Length: 547
Image (cartoon, rainbow, N blue to C red; front, side, top):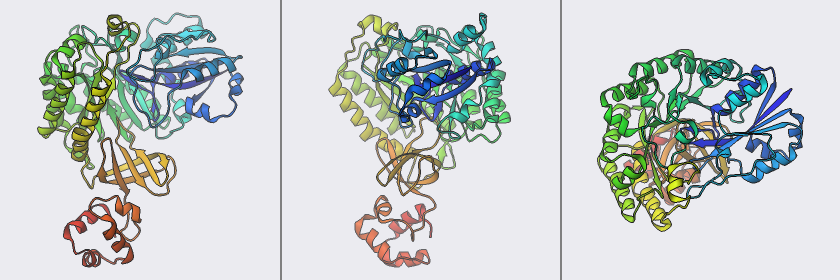
């Protein structure tokens, strides 16, 4: 018996599965198949696209497609599956038992500002709306699963080999589940997390650590605690969900013990209002994270809006100033630099098209972002998105799925933030001369390469040169854009750097670049100083280049 898992990618409020990320969904299902001694293979939709003939799908007895985007973004590592491709799979794969799972079974959309539609999957024998690992286990065993977490504990030892099948291996970010579901008493109007998974439930620390151990033994070195709507409430057993700092310490120290040579340990979501409400214990948790994590980590704040009216109607929150306090606390704890990069910074998510939104909302949001900038604080990134009207959410029920969004104001706001906030933030977070280690080349356009470090929302870096996809390089920052930065490979000698690379360095200019090239080679910096006759430019070159 053979099974094939096709990863069409998922992106949910508390889960990311677009390369280089590998979500728990395919990992757990892979483990179930292997548990029953069924040979299991794994392909991403991008790998499937590269194959000219999809009829090979009929070589399998089971075919599981996992897909669904409920919080869409822009992706460099892969392109989520579309409905045409889903139908193509269902039409061509006539031999295997076909199963489809993930958010796509509840609604399909690839873009914000749209209404998710219900798609017809009638050619799939099994449409799995929840917990595909449970569904497949029960299908294969004929037994009822009493506890999902007990099942996961059972199949984890069989799941690690999937990492080696990922096209990015060994540069695969394993998205780890700490908990799932919503910890708020009143759910946000637009969010699919409580719709899909209900009230929050947390895994045992020992189970998470054991999963990391299995993945690590299979070659995984990059990990993120992304599967949690609010990491600050992880492990709480009380009805009021107060923070449990000891659980977080046990978790992080345990992971470090079983994965001593990991390269990345990052997190994702945290609730800023929860942080301020439980300040002392949340600070202890953030201190633990900043102690055991790797540099470049982010806690993502689902702010959505600074407008009090919008907050009240959509999130049952009223105090936007709590967000400022939370940003300040994270900066104080995680702002220190390790290897030139801040250890832990906040990120802010903004969402437009929400209930109660007016033209004034855009001004309020911009003014708060500007306030954060003027306070000298750092934000690693600002995500600006349009709401998706997802069937079953309160937002969908109250709007009938019709989104009211001022597109002109939205685009103006986004451009203003990019030009006046993001640009300055990038210079603050990644100043000139910052060395970014292990940047992985993912895309090439002409002589410009685009790559990222593996991490939580890593910065996009553009650099010149003739390099290959997945080549790992160190890059030094020389310039900044609105959402990306420009770099030069490090080390790079002044005697080897190209004309175009010199031109990428601010302040050099055409005349100086030509002067440098015409007078090479230089035996020392004094030789270069004589022809430049400009101490400031000389110091600039010393920061980013070698002899």
